[in-house]
Length: 156
Image (cartoon, rainbow, N blue to C red; front, side, top):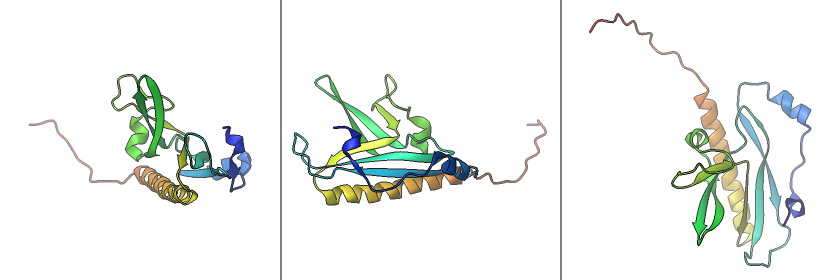
């Protein structure tokens, strides 16, 4: 199924408007949800939700944490949530590093099928809260606080 078959509930801003808004030192992320209009009737019955980072400022857009599960030699990539600020530094983008256990990486979107539209809407609400917490943590980390100056003379 292509993402073009998913509906959008939001309009997109022109890149020049968004670029002008990124002139601040704060970080921010815009999310664009795309919903499956009808219940899927294949081997994964349910409602599909895809959340994309549609715009961002002073933060990498790959904020969704994925785990690669391999069963009988077949890899399956599962979105396990929104990254923490530490995850943003630690996990690689697009593919897990060789030897990482668990094999974890980051993408700029999440795409999953849920048993009901209500569950999909609940996940959308929780992901908004988690992304907001991530951006708040990133903004706090960017704040430098002056502490007490230390004078060291080299004597022991």
